[in-house]
Length: 458
Image 1 (cartoon, rainbow, N blue to C red):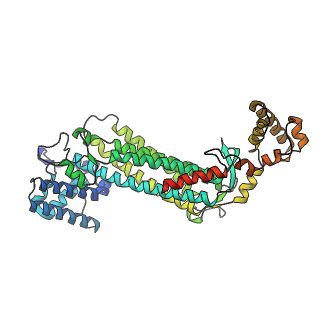
Image 2: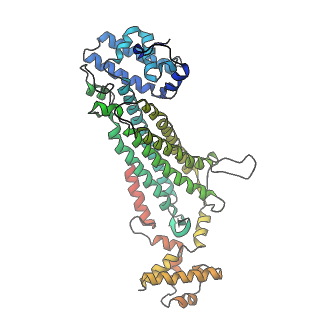
Image 3: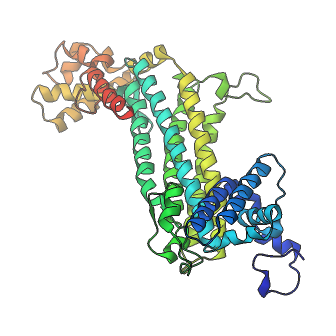
């Protein structure tokens, strides 16, 4: 029977399939670098406090580095019999340097050890996610700047509403991502806490220095309560929530891209690098990457829901249920980083069918609000103006025309205050450029918005 780290209390041999069910090594091996980093800090502190001799600490630290080298070189054998990455590393260390390796676990538990590993991992990954968000924001800003004068239809209820600048539309996603990045940055202060030294539940009788290990590992503070330290998973839930919201925003943008690329819209073309074909229909060019991002948003939201359900009924402190906190966050991190990279590539390489967009906004009723505003400026109450324009639109629909096609006499039949100057008001470019209220779609307002965005990126 393989000797267990906790085996002294038990008799009889474990069943293999039970060991496999109990083990987490097949997924928590991703934490090996963080685990060894935390162990080196712990051993350094134990030597500093006189709990380990200088020679013992040197042997342990050198052994841990050798274990890491073996893992990177593919020489380290991982076993479900040792359950998790922590015990696999400890067993490999003892095999390398002998019984002195067993002294490493003095003054700590797997409970605070795994929590430390997860804090280190998530802190690092959140910083990567912030970097990826910033990269995508830069791409969106560049796309907006390159297409500052392109007009497109703006939608509500997926019905043509008013003409807007493409740059204004795409910049809406810049601000969504700006908020996403802020949420991640704000969460770092709750992630950047060290649980190391909290022990299994109640601390330790050894004279350890938790502040020292926190400093060695780059944490800004320590948990003030040992029970909270080993049971807290708020930082994982918060990270999954933030990831899910990023993915929801990417899913919304993906839906726009999918619609824009359809033959019915034909507003944009995606690069062949980010599309696929059909095994049956030779003509097809499918926006599969955008569709995958849209679909993968369900994975991250599912991981968030799973994590919330995992902790909702757990009493203090550590419970084996918490082993299930890892796979969801590992997958969510991989998913969001990949999705941000793919979206960045799609936006960097897409082309805009400017002529199609210009034609689209010229052949619809998205200028109806301009006519209503025109009447208001003539002194007509807005509600009355709204009614007049509604009747004019209905007349156009029945006669197969647009507002710009009506002659002045037809306009005057509905309201006598309409004059020749209405035609310029109905022109899409005029409609857009008049909307220079702060945050509006007018060219001046969008340029001001982009300057603000550029300053934030700096």
